Amino acid sequence: RALSSTSTSSADAGALGDMDQQIISRAEAGDIAKAEEMLNQMQADAISKNSTDHLPDIDSYTALINAIIDEQKRLILEIEKENDEIKSDENATMPNEHCAESNEQGAVTIMALAEKAHDLLVQMEDISGVSDHYSSMRLSGNIPTELRHPSLQPTSHEYDSVISAFANATTAARDSHYTSHLIKNAPFISQRWLQRMETLAFDPHSGVRPTVDSYFHVMEAYAAGGTTHTVAPNNTRCNAPVLVQSVFDKLEQNTNIRPTAREYRMVLKSWCGSSKKKEAAYKAMGMWMAMQKQFRE
Image 1: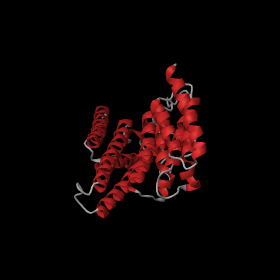
Image 2: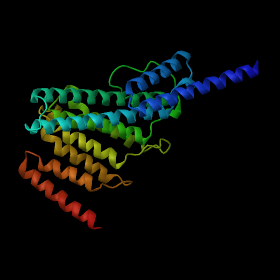
Image 3: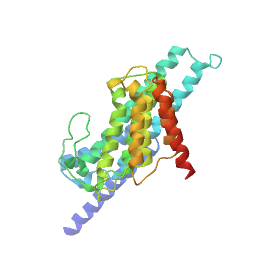
Image 4: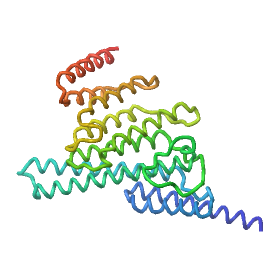
């Protein structure tokens, strides 16, 4: 009887491992819908059985988040291609209105994908117990489980990916002239995730540290959000260079990493696009001089 129980446990473990592998395979193949369905089913089974053994593993969550980012990038390339056709009547294959509508739909999808990535990271935080010590980042609703398993604690990679997902959403919205309440708030959501990383960095056991990419993608989100056709909350259009500069300043204050030429260029470009010409010229010149000094050393 004991042998039978052991065999059953081994079979269950093997089946769960197969499910995780299927999720990863589906995600890597770009089948986000099926991978998400399977992951949600595993999570639902774990909740119904009140068993952490039935939870998806961290690689399944990571693979799905990676697939979401890849799909966003693919859609952004499509928007860029459509924009090129709009600009060139000679090469246009459809009326400009059709291209614009297609681009807007692409931006809507990219924002929805950012929300999916966000929700996956929240689930990881909730199940791993991170949310027990810090405020939940959930946009709406609550996770209906008390299950806790530390193996699902997110790493810097998952946090960076979700931050970049919201930067991708603001970039797509800018390029397609699309706006919505969530799009307006996307840069602020990305900054909240950066702040979470900075807070977790104080805990030596978390293993989470902001990277240069963490700061860059928040800067990118603010820069893109400040050039959309509809003014964002708190007059972000006017404040975009200030917000980009503030994130850059925080990066400079981080003693573990240093800004690269990419981050300096982002700040310069942001100030050069400011409507406050006199202040912008002063700030841009100061940044240019700081950049020269940095890369001479």
